[in-house]
Length: 186
Image 1: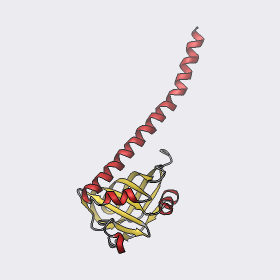
Image 2: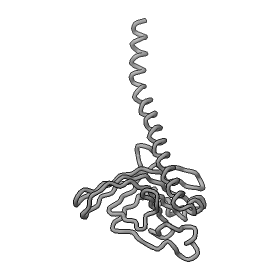
Image 3: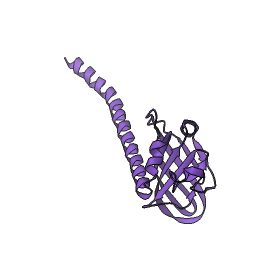
Image 4: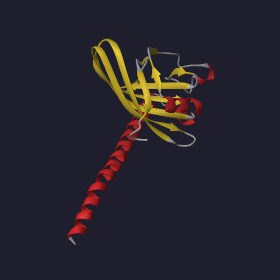
């Protein structure tokens, strides 16, 4: 009888970390999805036409980010999801940023990427993106300007909305920014 209790106890001890890890992963996924939903809500509030652009696109990625700059160095991190609107496949992603230049401050912001084609979405998800320098562009290109008002075109078929506080950013700066899959959550 004593031996059976010891075996059951050892079995539970071995199984519990796996259960805790699974619960932790599910909790982390839910937290990232919630942050992505908040990013979308912030963009929709600042630019209501963005909802149609996101819903009619091949896919989108929504990130919540935090950045800090002290004197000559700065960094930022973020988490989000990339969603294929046709298959509803969700990929959990991370963002890391490094910047140089004089400044001081803390900034919380949300980004919503809109992909007109599945190929553009797949490149973002599977290859990750590295952005250097400053990305600024017109929000109107031909007949697509109305649906992407307030967004910046960062590549052919790829639009980016950035919200800081309650308003769309007038200029988007991405210095040494890397987007990549979150291996722990996928």
